Each structure stands twice: as C-alpha cells, then as structure tokens.
Image (cartoon, rainbow, N blue to C red; front, side, top):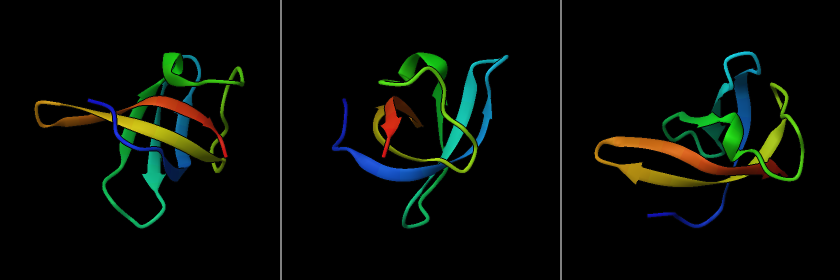
Length: 69
C-alpha cells in the first residue's frame, strides 16, 4: 500500500549496486530505495532533497517512488 508523498534527503546512494537510503524530514526511520524507484532523473545524489512515497511490506518499509524535490 502506497502512502502520501513525503520529503527527505538522500543520505547514501550507490549507483553500482542500485541502492540508496533516504532520511525523512522530521527524523523518522531511514527509508531504503532502489534505482528502479527513481523518477524524472537518471540518478539522485547524496545530500539531494527528494519527494518519495513509501510501501510497507510486513515489517519493512521502502521508497517506491523517488523524485527530485
């Protein structure tokens, strides 16, 4: 189930592995994402502000849509 869009900052991104982590504005838990979730740009950079939607599966949370803010 997707949530409303949120704002956060990319704190790590490894394009070779296609994995990254977002820290939400407001200090909630870190949210992982994969390259396939990035929209409107080819890559995102560490420190970049993004807008994202999350998906919860069991106890895990991940970003399923990540776009530049």
